Image (cartoon, rainbow, N blue to C red):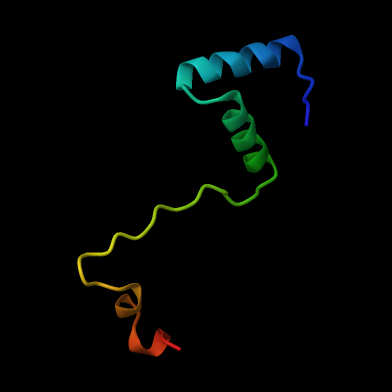
Length: 65
């Protein structure tokens, strides 16, 4: 997809990318997601298990199959 932005928007997008260290794509994606009230598509961090621990053991017995 190509976006045609006016000069002021392009300058603001470029400045925000430089200021934040994020790509212009990331900034536009976030803005569109917020504007359309869509859920955040960023994956949640994974669960860290300790040695010998399983995800099944973390569930209550009633939650199992």
